[in-house]
Image (cartoon, rainbow over all chains, first blue to last red; front, side):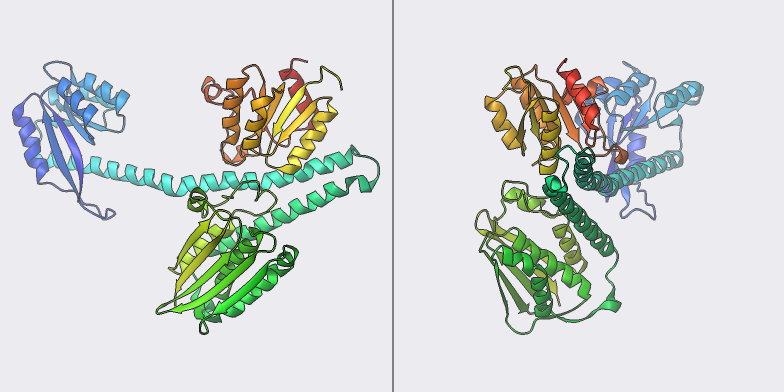
Length: 372
Length: 131
């Protein structure tokens, strides 16, 4: 059970103990809440003591009498507004000073409870406040988890799309103004670079499409028994032209025939991305070892390269969208920064696991384990 | 070589952008020195004082440009800096040098979105160099 901390500030001991008694046995529950909410009550008799408590403890709600021996309730309210605006303040006030109570709400008090109040009145007021606090917490959480990520995703995406556009536009302007000469040959390198950037952008868009596809549920109607070795071979063939240029050799092993019942598109995404990374981030003349295994209820796919490797910091960020390892060795390797996040998403969809072992300068091993 | 030719340092991890900026700025009549990373730019400013610097925001790190601005102003407080980025203001992720608050933590003299026109860039550089 979650608890809210209530600070009662009143110079009448009777009111304080009354509030404690009522709230200590009281819980609030709403259909949308996972657990009931209870209350912990702290009692103080003066505004000065109240401020001490507010400074030093986590307080959710303050029940505040205005007429206090030293500083007044409105002074405490002002302190809270200035220093801990997240605290909800309820003014406790006699009917005679309703006007004051209304004024207090305009100064930032959430509500007021007229004195004397019945236990039921106190409870229903606290019920309202709890609901308010709970919803506020949910909104905050949503903002942190969902919206913030989306917002960051969009800003980085626009950066990734704008950079190649700017580069291409720049080259076109140079050509338009014939800044490097009057013959088309003078611009050969710029045209090559423009085409490279167009290609990079196309890959990014393809990866984005993959990413949006996986966001949906896995589609069991597309499921079929797949031979992993075949899918691995297709992925090797697809990257082979590039691998030949870098003189990279593959080995592909499996213990028995390793099969899985899955959507072929999903499994292709895993192999294509991991094998193409193993080639892209490899050294000239390097190797890529692929090993497929049956393990009791699971299958494992291990892809080991002899490439540049990753340090610990890089490993922790590897599955973040658009993250790319930036250093001298990766400068000329193009990529969208979406490949591994996509793989991770597919693996999660199948309730599988992916982990990385790596040593800078030696190579990396990516292991994907999927339930059969 | 002319003795009084001004030196512009450009740091950006996009080699195409670097190539084009070098071409433009040499065309304006300045000497150009380029760095393709925050690290390289830091290395250059150890020993070289440019007359103006243009830094990309996102290089090895998302805030490489900010860090370079800080280091640069610490070493050469009088050298004007342009911070350039392709981050779109449309997405809401924007910042400028419009408020006192921004100026306090972004140690650049001018903030530019990439894709700026050549003549406009020339004007801004001249303004900062008081030419």
